[in-house]
Amino acid sequence: MNLPREEFLPADLVTVYRCKLEVELLFRELETQYSLGGFSMSKKHVVEILLYAALLPLLVSRDLLDLVTEQADDELVFPPKR
Image (cartoon, rainbow, N blue to C red; front, top):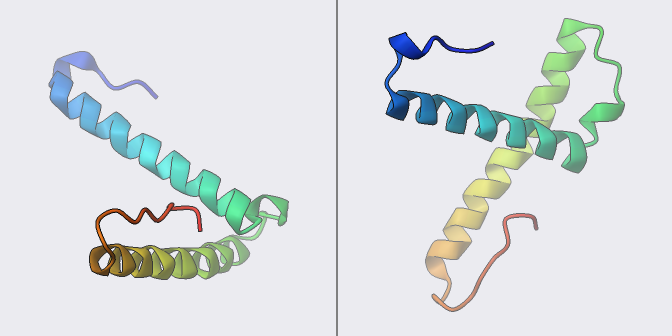
């Protein structure tokens, strides 16, 4: 769906598309890291359970990565895909 140009400032469109890209990258990561692409997605409750089951460890691992990065020496680099 395209957004009407006359209703949004260019900076707003950049923000919207940046958020859209982040969501797409998140779902790509969920599909690859948590193998969500291989499940039957026809039942809503199954989809919701699988999403929550994948999102929870992803969020916890990102928080842990942030904590480790804050405590580590500046020259150490921790890749996001651990």
